Length: 495
Ligand code: SAH
Image (cartoon, rainbow, N blue to C red; front, side):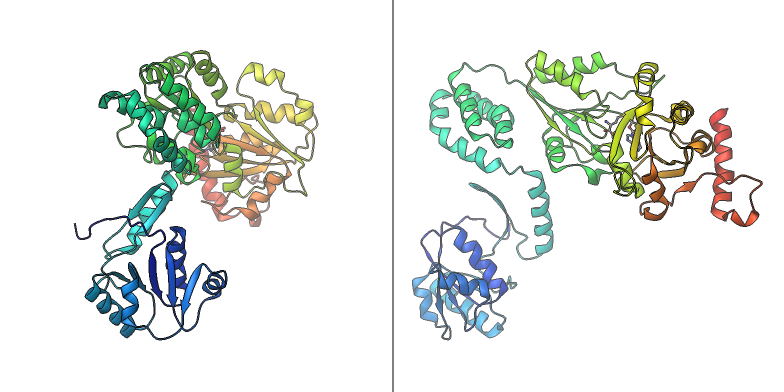
């Protein structure tokens, strides 16, 4: 190791900073945050440094640097653009055995200022020894996203209870078990929710009761539609803490790659006609792993509460007393619309948007078709590929204009995304021609017509096929190619 890591207590200790610009300002800000007594030496100050001086938070010296100033300080930071001064400061500091940092000059510095992730009192400092500061910064950003903001509060709580925990659990193994539960269980969950009082009560209760085997927990996490970039920070954190991940088939490999390496991954995907785990089977797996003390992530495509059966899973967990949390995800309708350039409620075209599913006989018959056929609303239809003919016929029968634009988005947000557009009258034919496959989402309404002009992701939308008797000039080469490919696909599809 090149540098010895150390955290310095600078509270009420004198520190000298040379320089009055932006760099000096950042160093002073960091020093003020730990209550150091800062003196700035510079002829001219940045507006912020000026304010701190005027407010009495920082002392100011304008004259040229004198080495004997260092006799009165614990640390010195040289942040001037003048190499000669920086060198002089470093030499004077070395002579007095005072630690000096010369900004952006590792060779002249006897201490480095690391990149910091602040979850006070928990502090993570990262240094590359001055060799790769950008890499250190990148790492800092990663850790920043991974560590929940409530970690500081958790550390404070643990610190305040430390003596009592030691008394209560004198044996190391029992104490470690208690801490593990404290950091991963309901107390931490309550702090994440911003409920410190309830967290304290839960911690007190845990301290008072006889220790039982650690109860696991379940986080129901929405994985979004496929693009891993659409995960929330909370989802990412849950994936990083998981012991077991029960995921749907729809969850993309890119998302799973972001999970803890040694987490056990179990696919509980459901696909008509293929191997699948029943809903009861999923419930049994959730209970078994949680009861074994595991932190379980139940990872679902899109949002867990939008046609995701997340509700049933929570009911089961509640019934069996397993603690749970829910992390929402970006649902397919919202994601596919965004990635196809379709503003779902563009004010000129729609006042509402409905998320609909019509994948089985019962939902088909209980849907209010007259309401769905009304103008000035957008329909986002999930799980509809096999039902498009029925959908088209019923909507038109209930008065929705046959000219209403649609967009079918297949594999939305993924590299393979395809968008097919046309009008309601062409819907079923068009889907067949282009061999649209699941997962695909249908957006119906005037807003779908905007996909042709606002598309930005992947290939431009495929349009409904031009009738053979239309003017040859109207045929675009791209459509010919697409048509040839899709009639081939349609033939395969039908076979
Ligand atoms: N809970 C999920 C929906 C599950 S139902 C969510 O909130 O998105 C499964 C249906 O969602 C699919 O049949 C399809 O209609 C839609 N869907 C999910 N991911 C999709 C994607 N990447 N592209 C298009 N449709 C998708």
